[in-house]
Image 1 (spheres, rainbow, N blue to C red):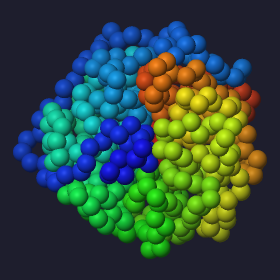
Image 2 (cartoon, one colour; image 1 turned 60 degrees about the vertical axis):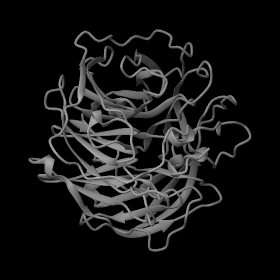
Image 3 (cartoon, rainbow, N blue to C red; image 1 turned 90 degrees about the vertical axis):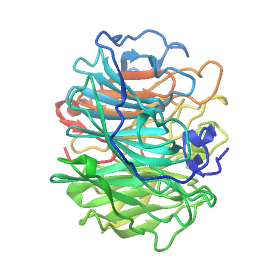
Image 4 (cartoon, rainbow, N blue to C red; image 1 turned 180 degrees about the vertical axis):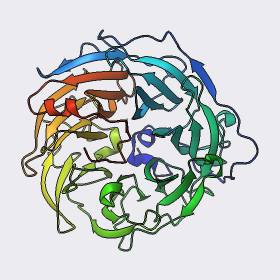
Length: 461
């Protein structure tokens, strides 16, 4: 069930919620203010049963808190998406906008504010006082109140220095919008790699060809002057996906001067020594085991890269007994002499029911020195914690999941990330979950403190 614009390598297109691309215009005039709902007495986290029933966990995982979606982000189509962290705050994207949570007490997360700014996907990153949203849906214009239309898509930028009252600052229109984006900080300049599927022949905002990524430059002291500065072609030998061209997701590791791009039909290893001129080091494909190259994660010392396959685009039950363990899974590659060599696969060992959409999705490292341990969302497969220190024999060491969502449909954990002692899961329909793993393998991670965390911009620990 893929939309005409081929955004179907992801959840939103499986639901056919996107509309066709249309012509767009660059932002003009003074920015319109975002609509902000303050909730200084927001509901604190609880461990009460959610709509889908009691949660299930391994013995070493504790469900610390659950905060349901609240108005104005609790409608049928208001899906929670990605997460970012800074200090005592978590930022949660939603098809309706984004929310800021106070997580100073992880057992009692509280909503500080919610910004109504409708669009798909509203994937979110945070850098200093700037918050960036990915807009992968034609809208009437760049401002939050522009409404539906066929005029614009790309990046929206906000000033969140006042957590109770974020302000819209500017926007940058990009070809085919922005499905996800990746920050590469460089002093007072923030470079943003924009990933988006396409093209759509009848569209003016997403015309062919679309064999590229786009790099946006955001001056941190004058974000209103953000602009596209490069459109590098990183596909000299393109293996076309049956779904889309372009990239779905890029993970940068600036300290290592590397990036790994999941580009629907390919995995690409990049040299980003010059962040505006990324160079291809290796391009790999696997048509036997991969359908949609969805995302990538380096291990801490950048000697391994995980590529995930979003078989079925997030809307199918691929964690069943009829789907091979190498499909809809994670492929573990060792990086040897700057070349990727596949070693093994990981897929959750718990078989899911036929009505549960389940496939590998967004995750992050758990910062355990000397070990390679990951936490990852699997939609209705829940949250999995797994060890890939032995690349050829990865294994699950903990999990959290719910019964099938009542009434069916798309549901489950969109993103699950580790931040300062806790795992935070952005559940599409249920809201925000906070988990804690207590296990000898992961306990050293509790000593690692991060000032901020954007999963697509890795830092060493």
